[in-house]
Image (cartoon, rainbow, N blue to C red; front, side, top):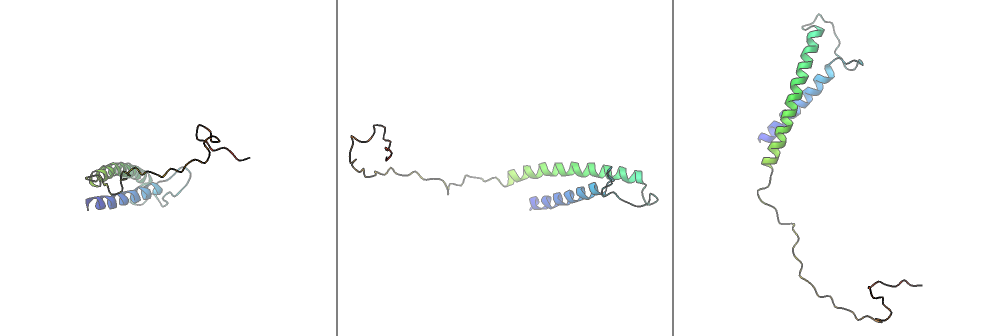
Length: 116
């Protein structure tokens, strides 16, 4: 239950990180925020806020990723090894040996001669 909750929080952090990155003004004129600087925050204040928000969200994303990976290995590890699919030792079966028709014509190393 804890793992699922943390996974949902991690997804929300990832979505917020993507949104904050896309809201930043880029050098190439990407999806920068438009509007007048006479709003609640100035353009400089918004850039500083978005930079800080990106840093905090990125740090939270990395910490949550490491924490979720550690939690998954601890919680999901099997307590014992499952032997249901293990190969069982096969008893040695004696195959009936067919007599060779002509031992003189067969090579000594057991190779089959090619037909001409």
